[in-house]
Length: 343
Image 1 (spheres, rainbow, N blue to C red):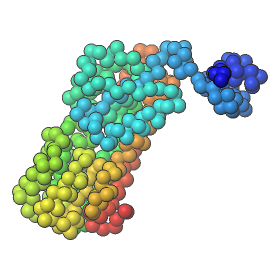
Image 2 (cartoon, rainbow, N blue to C red; image 1 turned 180 degrees about the vertical axis):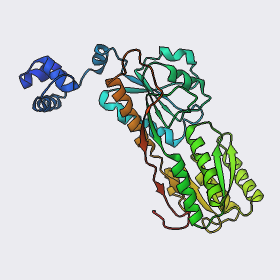
Image 3 (cartoon, rainbow, N blue to C red; image 1 turned 90 degrees about the horizontal axis):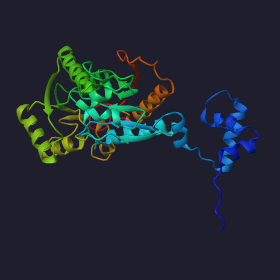
Image 4 (cartoon, rainbow, N blue to C red; image 1 turned 120 degrees about the vertical axis):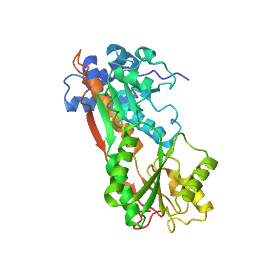
């Protein structure tokens, strides 16, 4: 059986009755090509199953055809970062850019040798030396969430108003009758943690609601989390709400509360700051903030593509005022909090 010949760009041009150069510009988006011609060429490419040679195109553009992705070293397993990565791939696929995960133990001095065109970072910690080295690199960089001001700043940012989001959750707990709220917070120096923590303190002072923060220095195991919750209830028997800031704790806290004989939301309201599918399949389902990680990844990818297509003038490495794309964070009320429920 004869093997089918792979279509070439010349085949597409011949089918349209135009030059090879015009066909190339129509498919890549470069140069002046009428909308009618572009549509005609794209239709011909589909009919011939023509696939562009991204390697050759990147070679002509002197590009690597790849994006370097930095994620917090000890938190990569979380559902949030998995969905953020899927979104980033989606946001860069039109440019045929591959996404390469940067090893967390890479030495900062090796960043310059990475074969990528730019970088995307998520939740930068103020004390991470590898993140600092990436931010110092002259290639374009986009971050998900604001970068601590003591670090070099990226060219673009996709961020959310975490102060407003955490105030909204606390107000929902207060409106449900809670007056003593426990907060489980990660011991991380990331901007979203700074913003959420400061907003919670200010809100507590302004509203006369008592807040008690328990810092988590790492992700606890299930037995450790149960012990933490028991300790919170022993230390503060008047506790009538818990807000979990780190991802993945909502189900464990709910289990620990049930084991302690506390009903949710009858005795204690429970809310998570990070939504996940597991929060929907427990009884009661847990109210949560939707951080929209996939959308954040898509927007970060598109922002980096825009920077690659329109680079800063040579020698201009100023990153004092990054462009910020603000992402709204909806709250999903469910059965674990009192009041109207969306689910």
